[in-house]
Length: 505
Image (tube, rainbow, N blue to C red; front, side, top):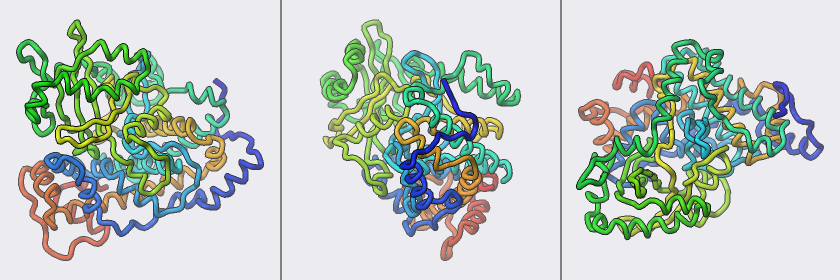
């Protein structure tokens, strides 16, 4: 494929130049280094509002996972960051946003051709919006991850700056390519990882190889062995409440008539697949169903695992995950969808270079009789990723640049790649966004502390009972007083009370 040298930009037409001038007038490059003051919203109240439509017994699990560290909190606080970003002006350069493009939402999975690819893998919040929202979400996540892993400020700045530089240079290259070249480009891992030696030191290469090899073993057969037991000669989901609860424990009446119920809930999903893939799906029958708690921010939304077997007893495991309104929709205008699952699927197909052949959507009534939207995909189809909390700095640096390249390619598919490349120019924006990432991290870290503090002090059920006992095995003992009014105060109290000095820098 053809490409432009580093920093080279396509020649802008008069109309393009005018659009770029308007974008820079609305949002100068230097302004990306600034962070608008946080809004007046109560972060704990925002999380509680999200929890009203979720499964109550899983909310303590969600809050426990979020408040385990500043990075975990950031993962689950997409709504908080969206509210913050909405207070600043935008470039007006619209793309299909991931909506939650932190570093842990990039990873490995299998393409339809059974090749291992690296791409975005979470689209619950996908929505049209200004490209910089995704870039800032990624950059801030690298900063927070670096702080959590004890990296010094200079090294963290270098990692975040390298990532945003990678985005800028990648967008310039995509701007010099044809649309078909951009569309066919994907991050495919080569057998033996030949380029790894020049990118990482020896110890880091070994860790990366283990991640890659482990992901190739994660498929339906692997999930069958981990999540099921054999009853009366048939595999059934093992009960591990509240994280994995079979339908026979949730609704015994439905379990007795599983074939009929499963057939009804899959009928709309089947219609969203291509004709040849409907033939594939028809080779399988549903044998069991279970509710599973997944992720961090998604915990509490309804997610079902469906175990299907073909006539030879070979498994296919599907995940049906509830789709609700994107957290970005409250701040950005966009299209109207008759099904939120369809929103997720269409956004994913637009941004990903290769998508699951069984990706589809449906609307169905749950065991409570309430109709909800879902998207459906294969469960753990070679899915893999890095443990961000234990990653070394060289691997984090490489991963950040890979994520930035991936994000630029995803944005180039849906937005005007040449406008974005011309707006970013040949330099300067990277350092600005690197500084902005640090400021965003400080604000997020303060929210983590305030969320922990206020949730416990005011007796918020999910934060007190679920989180603290899950983290430390004993109830929290909140300090008395007026509370914390600054991020620095939050950090000091958080460090004293919960031993998170390393995670807070």
